[in-house]
Length: 311
Image 1 (cartoon, rainbow, N blue to C red):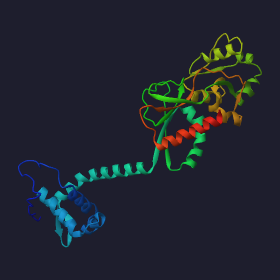
Image 2 (spheres, one colour; image 1 turned 90 degrees about the vertical axis):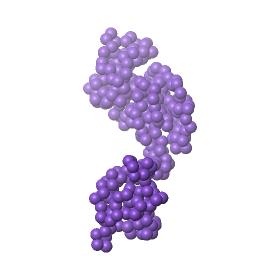
Image 3 (spheres, rainbow, N blue to C red; image 1 turned 120 degrees about the horizontal axis):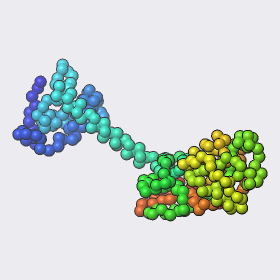
Image 4 (cartoon, rainbow, N blue to C red; image 1 turned 135 degrees about the vertical axis):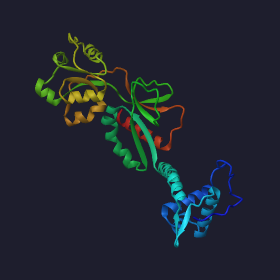
């Protein structure tokens, strides 16, 4: 193993640990030599001359007071200490490269994140999303779930929320109606017969979306006496209720804009055009304490356009 001459300019304190960071340019050069296995290839990657590569290697060896390479014939190979050092720094360079690539990728792809309730996403947002993607191919859309029971924390650029439109720290505008209409599956009607009057629903199995109070309100609105026993399964959200209706478990009050495709296909049937409004609707919400990005504005305006078309 060859000895290296000490350079006063870079020689570290010899008593105890090194007192400052290693010369990073020299470390980068050594990493390239070790990874590529050649001074020439390292010089090409770093866009410097082979002599400059050799100089940076000497700078690092002088700093460490350790020979990181040794001659094997005409080849320059890593010493045992050089191999150990390379193994130690390799992961750091990998992390640095990955972080850089990720940052560049984010800068090149214009992203916007929207949070929404599953049934809204499946029944309204996603079927319309292809038109936005075709018109804005440079914008990346991230769609995440929103828990409409707890909106305390939401890091999304915007959110579609369900409720009365009042959320602290957010500006909201109504996007679509949350009115509900009674529906059933076509398979259910084949089994139970056609339903011609609201009174007939008194004898039908009823499904409840989130709460059991909505059906009694609907019967009261139609001047129909509520069933003596308001039973039937209760489902936590609209997506589960939809699955239950599709399975033929019973009739449900569902928010019409979110099941429009099922009504159009005939899989589900609107029993009566007698909606009930419980005061809750779907709102487009943005934070009051942050500026909307250009990508966010594109999506926001697109949503508003669909709102105006459907009102």
